[in-house]
Length: 148
Image 1 (cartoon, rainbow, N blue to C red):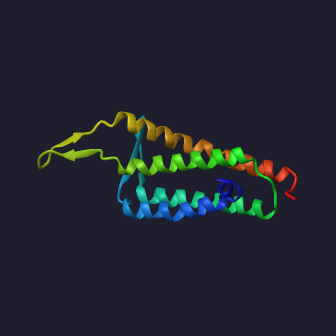
Image 2 (image 1 turned 90 degrees about the vertical axis):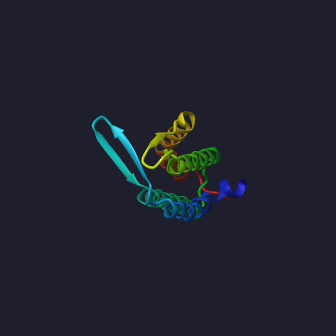
């Protein structure tokens, strides 16, 4: 755990291939969000590429601050990593939840997974605001004194 807090960029670099692999395996799925009369449709592979790109930028920022030998706040790093992981797993988990199953040839029955979908939706909603911890931690590390 101490190594994860001392070098958080390694965690995000390791997560990139896993996210991309899940995108390749389940990339043909879509995520539909209905807001009033507009549908927002996210293609699974594009969403995983976006998440991987965000992780690459985060790891680059952590690495640059690490190279300048500045001190991070450990609790912010741990909170950022854990909630980012929860958000990514929730976002990717939405693609693995079975929405429909067939009983007969052309009849579909909706599966209500209410509690699980609520948890996954909250995880996705937490993912984006929690990314604000990243620039806050970078800013605080840059104004803090250097490591010895």
